[in-house]
Image (cartoon, rainbow, N blue to C red):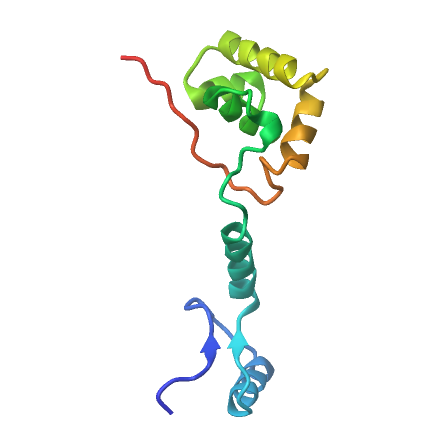
Length: 138
């Protein structure tokens, strides 16, 4: 046989004999075998790949790029101080941006902003921290 229809991670380490026997039996029967950890990663990447190209819903169109960056970080649960450090700005600047986001979207508080970010699809529960626009002044 030139190859087998199995995808297993390189760091298998110790494999119980029963699992190895089951795997070999599945392959011999013509079935494909994919390790569950690889399946999870594959599904996660596929889910990201099939999302619509635009991650900015119409209701967020009034926000500037910097306000979108702040909203994304607010939705991740960061404090004003943590957002300021991430964006390399003063905490007062973050407070101003959050206030403008709330005003533009007609929201009362950060909690409502987080809800809008998730419900609009701008932020997804499985999102990894993404790049933010850095504004470094020299």
